[in-house]
Image 1: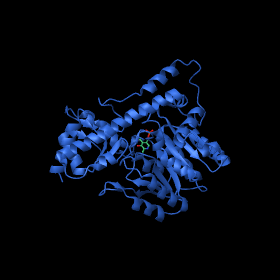
Image 2: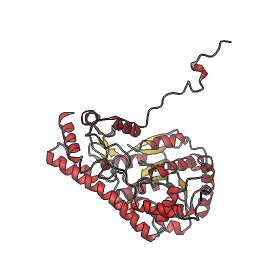
Image 3: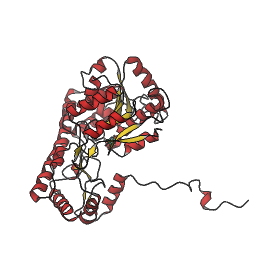
Length: 418
Ligand SMILES: Cc1ncc(COP(=O)(O)O)c(C=O)c1O
């Protein structure tokens, strides 16, 4: 027998090269750029007016408390996570006075970030939603959406992940008629991933009246609601306002999931802290659901990390720290709102063609500028201003020092590149 060729000797020789994750590739390109005027509007995290990451003052304070607490240790947490974290996290999204909590039909799984919560929810639904084997059940994600939604659900075994209409590019706003049309025409029982607030990447949310119409159709057509709440507090500065849609759906009697991320609103990006809130029909359904989720977690990460969950739990369970946190979240939301107002004002005073109201109509960290791919390329190549190919920018990438340069560059892109 002929000896194997050198290439065939590697067990990895057939591994295809994967394409890099867009946001990380963009950061790499930005870091390699030597131009002193460069601006990163592609980053997926909060930045201060000095373009720095922000450790929330309340988080710093709580971390000191944790470090000095001799009752704590590094034993494994329970598989489903820290009980006081799970319950307080569910409470901030559903509201303290949620009847569903009072009826003992709300439970939760501490997860590795919002992504982990989506993952555990998706794995559960694929196995158990409406009986077993849901590989053919359609999962609908908004068009456009956070890029990972598609992948998380297909990796969980869903073979039919589809887009639902959401963004009207011409109007630069919500395509409500298209959205409602897809809700009406999809197969009954389909699963819909809904952004609870501060839609990523468009920054465009339905109004309460529009949510009511969406809920009506979903109820009538027996569609499953999987909320993704990655920005509670960031959209309006108010935790309650940003949870309005989730609470409304619960009040309408939906059984639902809500994936919560504390990466953004606590600035705990690398601690991987998230929660999957489960609202079930009754306590017995909840118990059985959590028992299966426990098995899924066991084979996924076995049990979760403690630091981020402790920071969140200590904060949410102390009235004084809770108030401080709400204040910190408002600081971040207000900076975003200020940058939105200033960018719009600067574009309008430059006389940049087009309307720019969408900059202040949109909410949350991200904005869809409406720049086309050629204009985006111009911004990156000629102006060293980095943004996503879709035209999405992170408002926190703007600062009082670079906003004039960014506005002038957008003006040049719009007026010189078609
Ligand atoms: C819409 C949406 N969902 C989920 C996530 C995931 O959050 P985490 O970093 O906590 O996993 C993000 C993060 O960017 C997001 O934008």
